[in-house]
Image 1 (cartoon, helix red, strand yellow):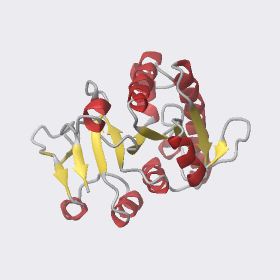
Image 2 (cartoon, one colour):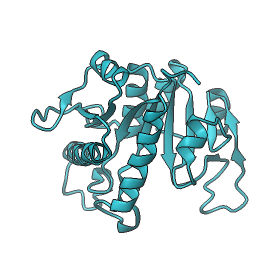
Image 3 (tube, rainbow, N blue to C red):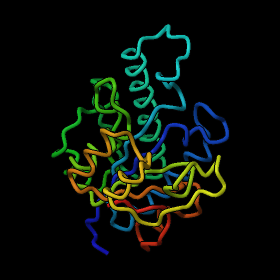
Image 4 (cartoon, rainbow, N blue to C red):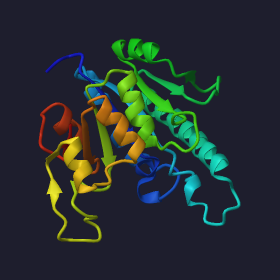
Length: 236
């Protein structure tokens, strides 16, 4: 295993909520932070792009009272809340962690500078990226791909509720077929909704390897990163 292997994990805010549906489910947050600490201790460099759906999802405001731009910025602020919390969880395990935000919040985070992020990763920090891209109308999928490219990650791990990419929604269609591996061309031809189109195009253009997997699978991160187990779906 290359001791300098570097990955970017795209982690949803909803995952941090666990059984609580909103806010933090402490056992869930402890579980994921401990799994990541274990990887860092084995020489893996890890960046995280965190979502904010456990506190706010602006695009789901059905009453149209909050403008899309305002809602997106509120969602970005929610990601900063999650990033600060994750930092403290990491530090409780003795793991160095740094929050970088695309939105300027000086007392809680640093600005996003890719070269500095790489320096911190080389020094053993977990770097938590918050604030999305810093702009409305872009998803955390796009932020995840962008940060993965900026820090020169070997791959992006996209954690979802299902164990990979399927031909149809497996929660609605029991006949849906799971793909173990896909090329970007195949994914486009099949019309698979892996990420939003902006994120997908950016990943394809920069030849970013993506693994879509279920983070609730026992020891999923260890199996994918350390043992190269065929968990989830590989897109490259």
